Image 1 (cartoon, rainbow, N blue to C red):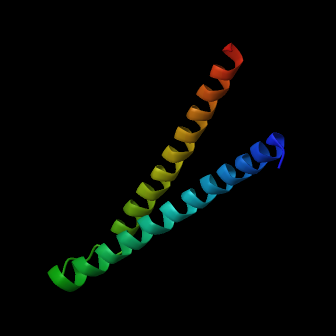
Image 2: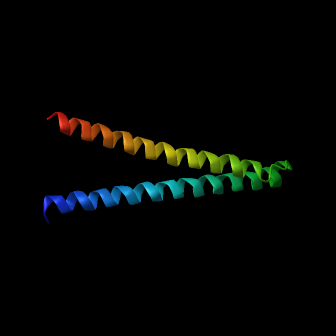
Image 3: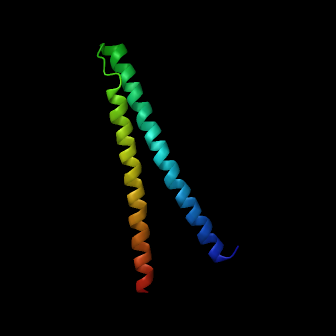
Length: 85
């Protein structure tokens, strides 16, 4: 396989990884929040029904954006390093 095709496939793989990571982190955050809401109500009789779900889903979204920015900044650093050579 030529070198150029490897880079295109690698870029497609990285792009799909960012999208999957964003969705998965949001879903995992929502599931954790839902589980904590259920646990708080069944174990301690404290009704926090939608709030922990919202908070942890928001934390999942933030984690997804953080990963996106980390990938973008490392990509930018790699491109700037290649231009200097």
